[in-house]
Length: 480
Image (cartoon, rainbow, N blue to C red; front, side, top):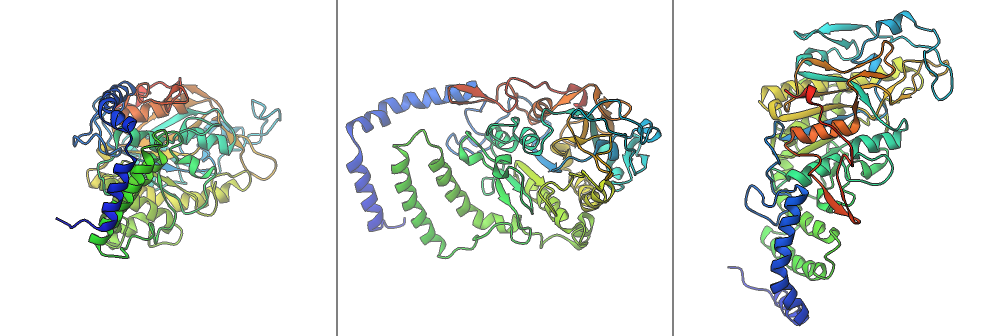
């Protein structure tokens, strides 16, 4: 056993001196009642009272879901700016026929003319789903896709649209989807973060898109921006034994401080992050390194080509992380800007550049997950905060923001394969068949993970909050 150091004894004596009679009663008698109350509140809120490992203390320990899950983990491929539904996965022959004619509806009080897609669509796979020539490689995986063509959202602006898609609320600060998932389920690998967000460029609204808000700060996403050096300062400056002693001493001081500030989760999160960082020094270098991957795997993700290298590395890193038990990985396609899919002008040039950067890596990810047997219980999601108008914006051959009907797709994790769910009208303007609101999407994602979106709550400021607020219905038509 390691001999106690003078500094440790000083801390222990200081802790004893600071223990008042009120503290003693609270920590012994009242403390047991607090534990029981905490367990009851946890059960009522939907957060499991105990972890799979029997550890009720670690906030990231793996927890039992509310019901049998078909997905264990999530990879969200987020395309900021808004990909155009009528140019990607929702073909509209009538739009092509009526190119240049006045649109059937005003947009923001203005009359605009229809704009046909400059790309051809083709049917792929046994399912015969239509995919634009923008995505020839993803099209080869179409029999694994569940394409939702009837998405709707509430905000036509990028800040509110991104927040709504990622947090369920377009104005005030709310916990992100990844934070809710890790709060409800914990993580399968205690030596790595439970939630990792990866983006090479700036993100609109910044950390609010992957933050924990009023949830305990432990559940915030760990952000990675540099693909060549994902995490800094992983090497130890001192020996492992000495580092452990220093960390233990720091923990005692922090716990003394925390005991008088029970209502603030930030210090607890800091303590947990110190412990996680200590464990990550062994596990993270291997998990975040792509050096061990074969050249063939690298080529399948496109990391050997300049156009696809960055997003290819993001996708490959996502596979490595979920393979090692990370619960939620969010990829932001922010190469060349914080909202690269926002083509108000030069639709053809912009969408072709974005599709070229992402098509091969996405196909590589889907094939790799399937080959490794991970796609069955990994939910992959693709989409942006909204779509784009079927009408031309101005004279620059661009499209404006469009929240009334757009496309996202999902794969794996218990969704039906090779189907198109819902529909927009003949021009791709409004969702007219089986509309799916963002709240419905979130409710369905949680359901696939074994979580009841109405039970997964957190009490804050006198009320119970949830990801879907007071809305959301599970989209049963896409469940396998």
